Length: 220
Image (cartoon, rainbow, N blue to C red; front, side, top):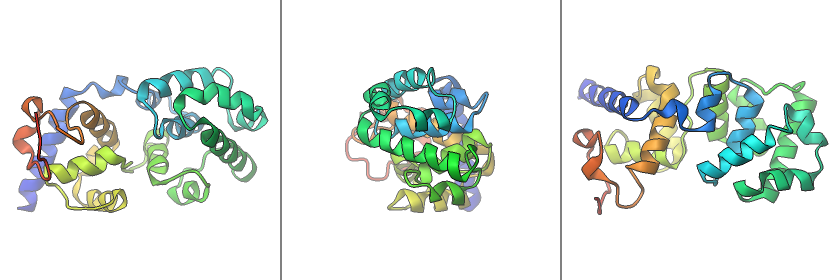
């Protein structure tokens, strides 16, 4: 049974990798080509609760003025708020960026720490952000779990978990490591375009033959 599940998981990952040209679809994934840990961290913090297109605009604008943590620390708060306004929750995000940049500058010599333990010590950085930095910037084995990455494996019938934290632990045991680096990017795109929270587009889903549709009441 276990080997059959792994084969099904591998098939789903391979189909989705062919279906989505994910490497060019988001700022974070393009940054993987020439990873800058600080820019990846800041981009991730700005992307939280924001539309992708708005994050794209804000990141491009901000990085014309910011090269490292010292630039954010020195920048007047009002100016930072104006630069990131379109990302939403801009006042709170500006405070977080200021704090994170200051801690990195003062406690880590201006370098983003390369361990999950150290990243999580910095207020404002959660497990998902930490895992994105580890996976994208430092090419470490990590599974960033957002709402899509939590919902879809449960819907597919891979796991039965109630929280993203539980999902991360379950997938660490189940998902072959060769897929870890692409998992977040693929499942975020999949969740936004086809496997939506409500009324998923099952009729055009490329992996519908491998899905148990757990909890799906309405589909198109």
